[in-house]
Length: 125
Image (cartoon, rainbow, N blue to C red; front, side, top):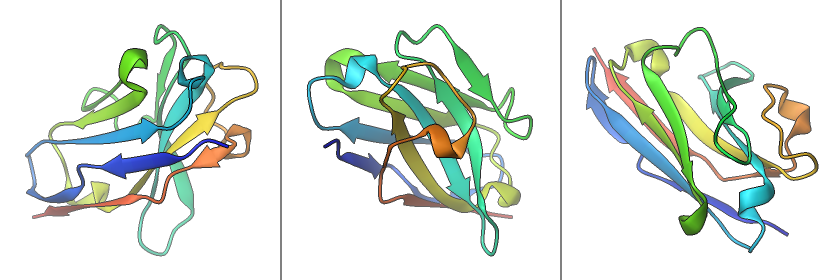
């Protein structure tokens, strides 16, 4: 069983930056692909960014490309999402997720086996 715990959410003004982190339990984190998803109010959960087990394969949603950066530190069992130039439409609950079967980056929500509890990010205009 893998537990994922997000942190770093909060309130920020439009144009500002925020970094959210996700720490995973267990000794096999380095084998997992990791992803960040978000749920905007009243909408389905959507893909934001994903990173393969080695950190060399990375995908971004078009809506965040050029503004958000995903990274991972396998020694710390942690994945990060650096969010710059934030917009009010980025306001959402952000979730990290782990894909444990292949370790290959994926945008498909159903490929992820484990989920964190989420952290709220609010961007004021």
